[in-house]
Image (tube, rainbow, N blue to C red):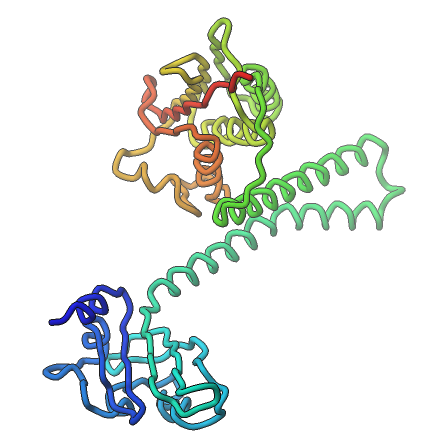
Length: 342
């Protein structure tokens, strides 16, 4: 086996190359397995007889594309889905090499890529659509209901009743805003385009603000311990608030009893520890917590919160770990870098 064949066999996708006469001159291991090519691996046989692909209507790839005919300026095939002889779906694209500009075809190269990656992406998109539709439906229904009622029966309510309904509409609008922010953050984290404006921040003050807000929205008890003379951290303040809010809300949503938040210094970084008294997170599924749409138990949410939290911690060069709280629940530990000295 020559070095060129070894190189082609190392490719993750199937590769088939034919010469100017339409005869196959090269196939790699993946293509031979995909197309069921034994013995000679299709070498020397007509490309039409080797590339036995059909679409869902039964049309042959060769009949559809006729690579050696057609426009003289054609140099490639658009990626499309085709069915292998064994029934699997592959994404097929290709290139035509011509003998000079507008000349006859001297080489045809075809690449066959497994469609599993696309299926996984399609599933993720479907999950995203389903999640967004579900999460939008409830607050939108509330907003529409209260607004319609106020428009049609404004004179029937006193000021206190109107104020209560408008406050509910405002809460639902804020919920919609948070969902939109989550979706934007996921997209920006995935593409590496999340804008950050880091500066020295008093993390103790942010924790105090988040806990006070959480106390207003729930009847749970909170215990907060902040070490004396805690140094500032280097962070985008809005993103740090988002991280702490998500961790505290998760502890309240999935835990029971007391939610404890501890801030101290450890290994040259500020350590934030959030404990709850719930059932905890089994060790065997902890890595899945940071994946998109992860949910545990029957409590609500988009399943995007911890994915975003982990992404925000990482872009700030911090670390995040899941462990067991002393009370038997989950413990989330974040190490956050100290503010840089200037």
